[in-house]
Length: 452
Ligand SMILES: [Zn+2]
Image (tube, rainbow, N blue to C red; front, side):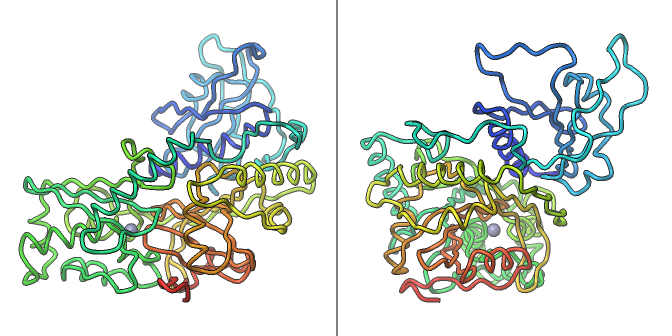
């Protein structure tokens, strides 16, 4: 079964494509049924009233995440007839396949209308689609939401205070961060991701569970993740370092609960979003007796074919998205205008999602998205890192799957991933970085002095 996080990611990407296709902002909603979820979006007030048999129902398969478009059937009927993704949809999102027409009609429902598409649809295609956005428009659907300067300062101060409180006796780590809260035998332990140059010290039972995972199957920087650090902290407190047996650790952790929350620039500290463990942390936690299922691999589907149609529109959208992202300042920094951004991102625009979770050459490969539509503030996060690196940075996407990173390109075209364990060098160019992410090449970590 796909994870909640992956489900949200698929729905978000569906919403971006639908927004571009329909010409109005689509907010994704999910309706669950035994086969998966129907993804839909409310129509705008005053919009056209749908005719019976009009439109389509889009289903996300519960097991694979494959998207299936069911034309001409209302959701209730489509859900009742859904038997799984068509063979060609096994590639999972973003492949979009048409189902085999269901046999017979149900009750008094009319037979399904002919499909509106004769071939699998490229979700990145913009035809038929809206006209390119007008670059002179004063408001843009792209770019992060704007906060008032007062609210931005309040949140920045509250986040800094929380990071300092969670890092007693040490310099507070930079954002983005994940805070792990472990409750066990009536006690509460908390930890952040470990971003210092020195390696974190783990309990022997955690080290043993980590060592059982081959290096090529381990997620980048997992031993620095707060979910493992907080468990080590608790085990040191509960029994010292004398016990190395995972079975002993499992007995200590009976009934324990672990929660993860994201702390990112612009986050309301009173309402941080929940976060997920990466594949490696999930595996270690389950092997130490924490509740949950062992995470599974996800084999990368074939990438969607892109036609040349719509390139002018994509270029216009990319330019507008970049401008809208730059337009939102941080409390201390602004994002730079890098002259090559539109040329760099247009081949991947409006977004380029890669779903994967499997062993790689030197480390595990995980899902990532190159995305011109930046939905969160990054000016201060990337501005602080730019000072350390000596080069200005711009956000170009992110990684889900428990990494919660920001992907960014610098003024020399180099690409980095910035997550709760630090910043990682992915390659000298975007093409190189994509290869690194696809095959799991090793990714050196930036030291405090900005070198790697
Ligand atoms: Zn992890």
